[in-house]
Length: 165
Image (cartoon, rainbow, N blue to C red; front, side, top):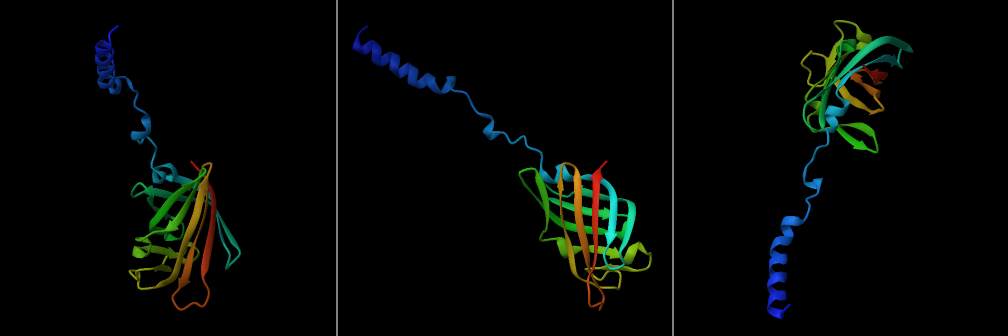
C-alpha cells in the first residue's frame, strides 16, 4: 500500500469517524420532576402541640405547580399553602418556602370553621410568621405548618405524619 493510499484511507476514516461514535443519553433528561414525585394524597395524623390534640385520618394533598414547586391543601384546618419549593437529595424530598410562599397560606385554629387566618389577610384575620416545612421519604410525608394567629404571642403549630395513598 502506497503512502498516498494510506493518507486517503486516513482522511476517509477521519471524516467517517463521527458517524460511528455512539451518542450517550446524557442529552436526554428523562428524569421525573421532583414536584411530580411528591405530588399526591397522604393520609395520617395531625398533632397540634398547643392543645396536645391528635386528629386522626387526615388527608393532605400535594399538587404540582411546576417542576420544583408544589401547593399543599387539606380539608383539615382549611389548610392551603402555595409556593413551596421541592429539592431532592439522596432520595429525600424536602420542602422549602419559595418566592411565592407568602402569596397564600391559610389555616384555621384546630380545624374549627370560622377561625380561618391567612398570611394575605384575605380572611380578615392575619396569620403572622407563617411556617411550612417538611419532606417525603419512601412515600411517607412529615410536614409541619403553622403561624401566629392575629396578636397571639405564641405560634400555633401542627405536625403531620402520613403515607401516600
